[in-house]
Length: 243
Image (cartoon, rainbow, N blue to C red; front, side, top):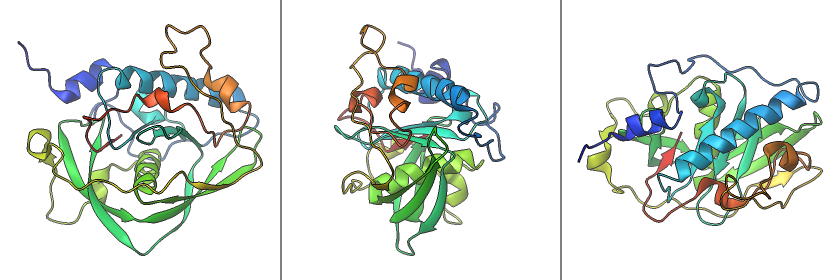
């Protein structure tokens, strides 16, 4: 039996790999509401990619994917927390405040999936995003969810998690990692200050289900959205993977 490396598996699923075209500069923000159609198209592609990946690899600590990882240099990302938590859409995200208190956990990246790295990050961040209507949405994220969100925003700023690692600390092979890091702590969804919030549920398989809701339909109700938790297909055997 041929052993397929995790990075090759992600490449075959359409994830751009490190050294093969991931931009090292910030992505281009959306001019909303003028670019609403383009924002919806990009989000549809991100959710499709997340679903493909989730069907072949479980993620016990949550996952996310940013537009540059599917070859689109736009400021958009999707984060799927673990368990039954709803997915989070990020358009034009910007961290406005971060706590001085930090913690350090292992992270992975779909764009170099063969290793894991020990990354320090703030325990709490405040993030501004843009709604399709052009309104600004402010959300506070704590602990595990703050880490997931921060990781994806780094991608949109042209940074990989290796840029955050302490001097002298290198990533380790995934075979050596194998869930050696402590469990992440989640304290519920982010606290939002926004004019609307959706509660639309995605089906377990949008491919086979004629009731599939596109990103366009979901975001009609607001872009800081609460979406169905099954999009990311979170499992019990996954690794600390963000993207």
